[in-house]
Length: 361
Ligand SMILES: NC(=O)c1ccc[n+]([C@@H]2O[C@H](COP(=O)([O-])OP(=O)(O)OC[C@H]3O[C@@H](n4cnc5c(N)ncnc54)[C@H](OP(=O)(O)O)[C@@H]3O)[C@@H](O)[C@H]2O)c1
Image (cartoon, rainbow, N blue to C red; front, top):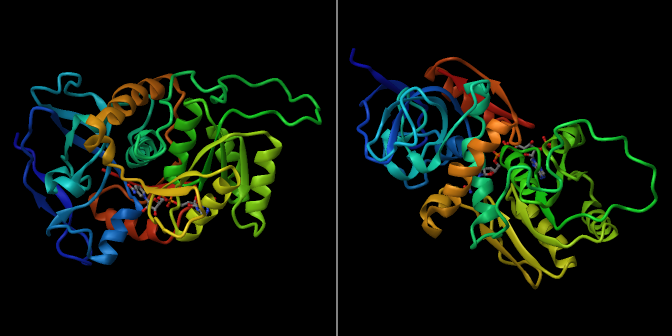
């Protein structure tokens, strides 16, 4: 039976998405064709639509996060087989419509595909791909923070598998491991940063609304502070000094000028360092602090793709199977067909808190 492909196309800059047929994709040696079961929506999707920019050729197919079954396997993609349940970071923004996520049968490159456990639902797993790539790009590329890679059971702060003993009363603060400052721990990107950095052996000190403190801690954060507090910077600096921490860098998962400057001020108090920012890179930072922009696809295109191999190839599938890495934040399903993707973009744009907008297919 001939399969018919459909996509949620963006026909031209700033236009609403239109669901229409799409060519059934070809396959290169290192690629797979998936039968898509769930897609997640990212801020970049509505940002592209709203701006009409990003140098795209139209019509285009947006979408970076897919979860589904392997339908066809390229001749050099023998690590996968037909029927495997996988997630993939779809690379449509750089590679053209067959690689866009918002279609029934996307074409994906194996460098950013990982098998998922049988008990992990597609709609839950779809929250991960872009978030994982973006977290990994900021944490591990030598040109960004260049931190240690994660290991299974690795970090001394790794998420406990069993209930820990009740804390003993003490007046002394526990000395932390080397600390990563993370701005925005309850965001989608921040959720992967916490988990990866903790599995790499760092303590993560992060910011979120009080309603999401418990969420960030469940993922492994050591300390969570409210970013609405006007005194957050001196409080953060004092707490880190009290813990005797060495701060290895900052990951700004929000990436506004203001949040980059907040991270930079904290780093400055500890002698300087690098802020990895997901969006902005203002240049008027305190002496000794530099900012680098995070690019999710750099894990494939830079440093021989080593970061993609370490995270997508090795760590992620094993950690999902082991339960050490959680698919977080929880999915917020807004519909069950490509026709709901435009509503998903609108819903993401209106703002989410520790949730990821998902459309099932
Ligand atoms: N460069 C890249 O390759 C790349 C890739 C992916 C994403 N991005 C960018 O990264 C940003 C985050 O994307 P996302 O999908 O992770 O976002 P998201 O999940 O939609 O972000 C929502 C979260 O942001 C938190 N937040 C908002 N303002 C904050 C602030 N001032 N300080 C701390 N937390 C704050 C909120 O926390 P509370 O609800 O707890 O208040 C909320 O949980 C977006 O701008 C996106 O475009 C860049």
